[in-house]
Image (cartoon, rainbow, N blue to C red):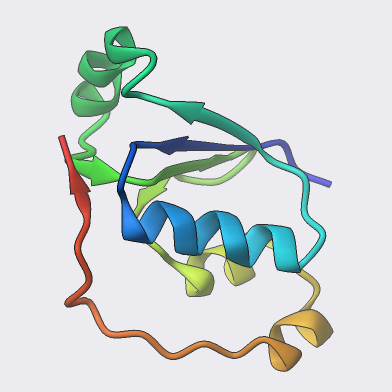
Length: 98
């Protein structure tokens, strides 16, 4: 299984949704809260990210926001599990902007 790191921020709805999604699929991930590690903000911005969560999956491009579609494409979730857990969300959610 791929190594997954989720960069989060306090009071970030999309961060909570991403963590809940991964946890519900029994997918292990490492969480790094950038409110507790502000030295990482410059690195994430340099990589082009402007909001949290930032999800990094080994072997794939990193992305920001709650993106079950990107998690599915990465192969970290089994397709049978995703069918059981089909969320439909728009893009109007609060994001944890830096």
